[in-house]
Length: 273
Ligand code: NDP
Image (cartoon, rainbow, N blue to C red):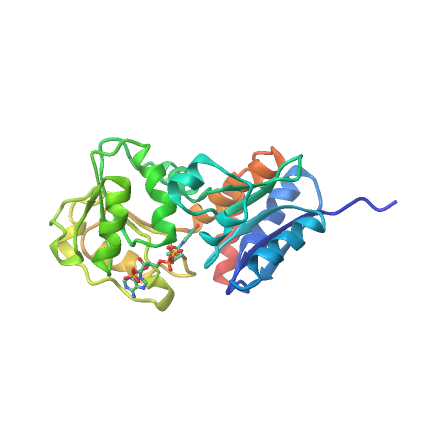
């Protein structure tokens, strides 16, 4: 008799570039189980039907990426506290009674990676650049670390203002960010996708202990270069966050805690190829 496959997947559009199968297959190898983990290209018009079909056919869990992180909340039967706080989810988990739980592991993924990089969060002055899905996902987690201040800045300032109002934090336009005003600066914009630096004064990085780009690439990103030139003490890209958010999803699905360090090393080598 053939064992039933343990089926997982990631939904997105585009999705071809996704590294999630690589990561989850390494986690499964650590656990000593065989899983399938597919990339599913979906579309707003049939996303709900695609997800229901996947779970009706035995799917156990799924990741959800751009542009479905908000839409997915409409089809879940339960929404975790952190997905509710973020207003977005990146993980679906089929509960034993067949119901679908939507969760958001982006925030915990970022925090775990920031702790790996040994950055102090409590009482720190944090700047988050961007006001899209990634920013929404990470803001509740950052706030729960009790920073001294949290400021949002975004290309479209009205969006930063809306988000700042929702989370009861400050919003400033890019060109009014104070010199030396931040210990931790997180780039959660999509500017990296087009290899663009942000229109920021270099002096905002002068007291920055860590400039963290949620985007990642084979080489240091444009934002990392910009931050280094402005005097940031340390820079990092978001590959560690990617692995950690995946680990939190895997833990939810399988109640198994993967070791992330070897997966991050392997993935770093793989993206250089
Ligand atoms: P969204 O499309 O939801 O949001 C995009 C944000 O980027 C908006 O705030 C937008 O500003 C801003 N933006 C886009 N282009 C530019 C530009 N050229 N200059 C300045 N601002 C720009 O995307 P997400 O929030 O989902 O993703 C943002 C980034 O985070 C992506 O690079 C993604 O790869 C990364 N990410 C990484 C994760 C990880 O695990 N490492 C997890 C999730 C996301 P405006 O409002 O003005 O349009």
